[in-house]
Image: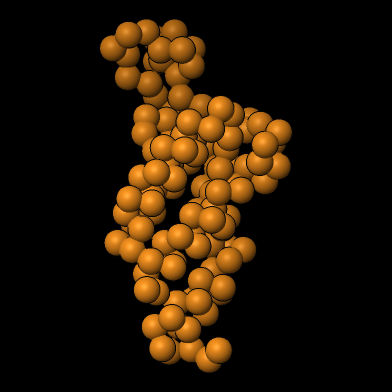
Length: 121
């Protein structure tokens, strides 16, 4: 019960920090997280672009320097930060799990303790 609650709470608290353009990454990440809920695993950013969004750096084709890579090209990370839209999620940022943990970590600990019998209600 405690792990199931924590996994769902982490997702709920993390979502507002996730970049949101068309909802695809959010929806796929949510579906994968729901399927794993209770396992201790939460999908913070579903492939194919979740990892580079989480890191918050623009990736480009090494030969052209363009974010639009040629077929078969392996992108490389730049030092340039991604400029996340704030239209849907005003708090969107990179490393959104860390932002949620900073804001809600104590709540997570308290909630797990309560559900696992180690905390005061």
